[in-house]
Image (cartoon, rainbow, N blue to C red):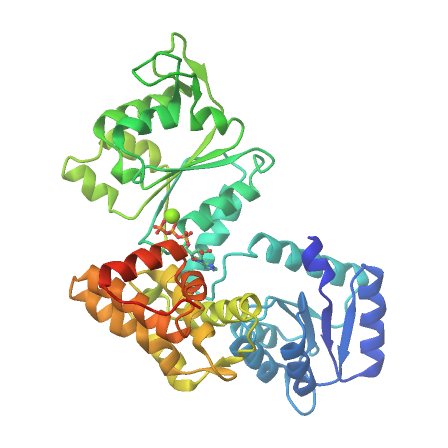
Length: 434
Ligand SMILES: Nc1ncnc2c1ncn2[C@@H]1O[C@H](COP(=O)(O)OP(=O)(O)OP(=O)(O)O)[C@@H](O)[C@H]1O
Ligand SMILES: [Mg+2]
């Protein structure tokens, strides 16, 4: 709650009397308050400062509440907005919700009603603070997850690479009664099969050649908490059988151990494959599939929720402007259009990477098409299947962009300076050291 509570609430109301009353009430609830008498100055304020929430009247001169709401949704993203409707008509309230209001209260209202509405919004905002979305399907997933988190139900999260599977898994853990206990993630695709078993279940000293010490597995490390089995579709049939036993018996066997050890762990699994299809084709155990699939969650790819592209793009633009110390404010129309029309095969992760680069390259206040294009050239080689060529182009282009500064290029690309040097040797290119 803290970080949210430390940001002030923006109150927009044309009546001085109402502004003062709201200010007093909100301060009583421990909030800092900024007052505005119309939507125009409120939009200005919103561009200058960060707020936890907007509290706005509907009927105002200069800019009416609905227009204001639309403006907020377009330029600020999904900041919570609590609307005060004056005329007591349900139609009005419904209209505001359609335009993206988070909630509404009707005049006249008591201190208690205001208090409750604000508390609800801020709690929700905290819970959803990392998963940003404007998409109804995604909102529905988040809603379901918020309710499921408290149970110990096994959850299978399916979605393409970079759609936010791990983010969702962490959210489930954070909202669960296990949140004070460990969250342990195991990437089943990254660990060779012969090591994965001991990684998951541990081994006793001397269990096999090289087992010089006892090793505690991830299931035991996650005791009382949550284990995330990432890329479960990559697990071998042999390990699938062992995992099935763990899910059924709620106990594990260390390799070379004599006794089974009870484990109290909630299991979340993710996959970017169609696991049902894997079953049908005999690569995944059907009984395990049904065990895991108690509650399936399918995250749609980014291209199927274009409403999230501007929201996430603005979010990443702001994030990288701060971290890269730039003063980027937005996107040119063409640049935004380009973003909206891309395929995003790497989904949100790709968008995040593209924006990091774009903010870095951006020379003015707005990200232009040029700041986004280079990647397309690189993508051309990726699509043609030539990864080596794509990598080379990306590295050389980035170096050019940063005037040959290898440290900067390494930071933009998320690789080490040494890797850059090695690659340059490989290409027979020499950028002067900066
Ligand atoms: N809705 C979202 N709001 C904000 N950030 C998001 C959202 N979805 C994904 N991200 C960010 O995108 C990146 C990729 O997300 P994540 O690692 O959860 O994806 P994933 O589905 O597990 O990918 P992979 O299949 O490649 O492991 C992360 O940096 C994450 O924070
Ligand atoms: Mg992942």
